[in-house]
Image (cartoon, rainbow, N blue to C red; front, side):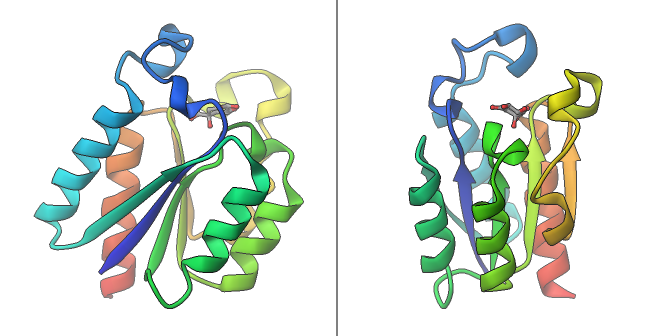
Amino acid sequence: ISILVLHGPNLNLLGQREPGIYGSLTLAEINRSLEQEAEKLQAKVSHLQSNYEGALVDAIHEALGKHQGILINAGAYTHTSVALRDAIAGVNLPTVEVHLSNIYRREDFRHHSYIAPVVIGQISGFGAQSYLLGLQALVHYIRK
Ligand code: DQA
């Protein structure tokens, strides 16, 4: 099983970006632990980070035929992007949404996710662990 991991805007700054909210791990460290978790699950991950909405849309389209599922932290585009939602709905690949922070404990504008209605489920609030939990859930979903 091959999973595409997508990281949205500003997640390249992890480690230095608001560490009280997002933790001190860098994106490279998170990607490394995802690779280790994937190995345990006998799956593979490919990751991409972009600050550009269109690049994320392209990556979702290109996942078709290459990957069996998508794990996405869309960052702020979670709360703004109809285009990302339509891309996920369009390719119809099983997708899990993750967030480092608990978006429901934060500002009102973070409480709404445009992509939540087109994903299998969402994991929010467990820091870097959200990604690992999301990967496990996605791989199990695809296998069953
Ligand atoms: C985030 C939450 C979003 O509200 C925010 O814009 C991010 C990161 C998270 O992982 O907690 O960039 O998706």
